Image (cartoon, rainbow, N blue to C red):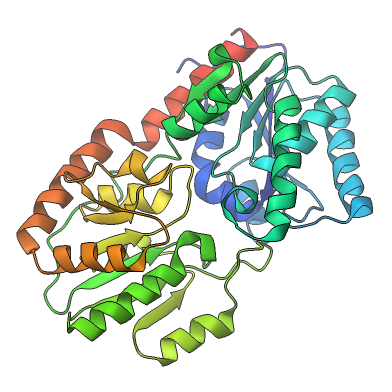
Length: 382
């Protein structure tokens, strides 16, 4: 893309609750924007990626916010911090990621005169997946807030999958001309390459934060069922606990599952490409997703997938071509699908090859960067 010319570089500010999510899912796009001539600021709760953001040439701004926070005074302070930042930096464009940044950021934009917004609801989160009493109370309130704040004048709304876009349109949350589909964070198909399956006992990976709504409980239950049937395999949980998420699985529970000898929890890892190369199947029995990066990495690695037939997962998995889809919250169906693939190396190979082709055709990092930069240019009229 041709670099922008401007009296000063156009100022792009990302608003996102946690820095590790930004680094994982949006850093590549931020760097692409910087190469295209933008000054890029990132307002987030800085937990461990501050140096990485600075090294990339971005401007980190600490945001005192908690994803699960509900205390009115604390939340008002978080909101006011965003208002002050928008007034101070006067960004030409703000890219707001996930529900709390969308709500607080859109309110702050109205109070500070910021005109151009991109709102990205990503995976919708705990409130829309949980069956708890708290989620049932919050859900209608959040829908009301989104009806008012998701798609104000001068904004675009980016959806990661076609299901969420269609649902938002049907619910009147977004204007059709403002509803944009950019499918996930993309995957670097040059870095993650397919290689032949390793020998030995097959390995099934679940790569996700250790949350109940990622289907971790169902994965463990399926592993128990398969062991009882005599199906030989190793079942690996890859991902850290996330205590600021209300769906977090306590480390004690994860350790108890490991002690039973059915699953192995390896915690948070940075060597996902190597882990995929050493695996045979990737599973994600999630209740709902935006577009899970782990599944895009599985496609790029040429690994077959077993996932749930829910928004986000079915965007990456073509049933019967790149993997298998099963109902959510159904460990028996999950176990049956895993057993089918574990017993059929040829089918794993065919699904893996088709998945690699799909990653190259539809989910590369470069495609996501181009679509995002085109959207920025459209909003700013450059």
